Picture 1 (cartoon, helix red, strand yellow):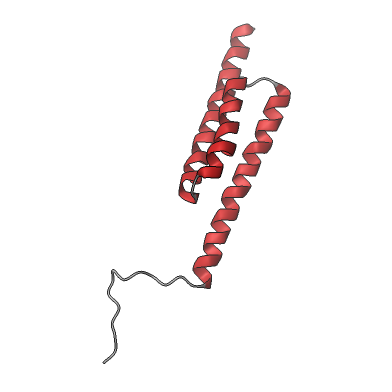
Picture 2 (cartoon, rainbow, N blue to C red; picture 1 turned 30 degrees about the vertical axis):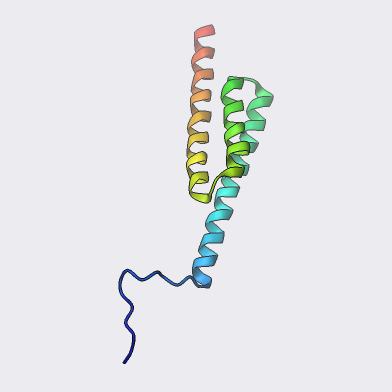
Length: 98
């Protein structure tokens, strides 16, 4: 008698799943590298508040190293949001100075 697999049985991970996982991890690392490069540019321009830049840097270094991949996705979302808020603050303060 042949065994039937139930719908709730765990899926087998094969080369395709491993490749997809590696691709996703590489994508997250690439996004992190891009944000770190953007932080370096913003620090050199000094238009964005340093507190925002420092917080994003902390998220992408200290908290990144301790996080799993799902949490790293959330860290990237938060880092992008925080950088955008910092940029908006710098634009607002620049227009108020004029």
